Image 1 (cartoon, helix red, strand yellow):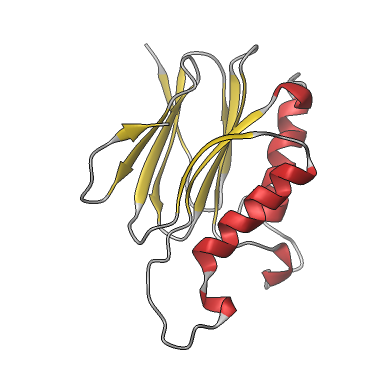
Image 2 (spheres, one colour):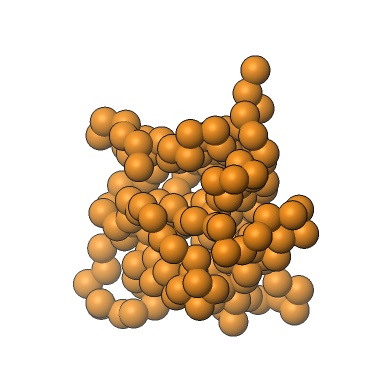
Length: 162
């Protein structure tokens, strides 16, 4: 029987072989999955905002921000014995849920989240092997640590796997 690991908003969780890692409610948020095909270890973060400089508190929730979540995922997976050189990434989410007539950059949270995640992955040399980002609809994602498939359920659309 497979274990189902749920990842809440602004959280990071990890799973080993025979696990499903799932998060729901990805609107402008981005789900980041890092996995090691050799050990079958995987981690998922549900990030809300692009940059930790947006934090209103001195203590930063690493899972909340793209710049800190990518680093925390890698660091904690390395502590569990995963080698960074083997990590691969998949991402989903980053929708523009609402349209604003002002066109202000600060209101483009979804696209900015996607850009920040991609930048963080590139900085650490982790290849992004698949993504389903953008649009204007919410998503639920579930990663299978045995097959490395990311199931994507988008509101009012068919499910598919990347």
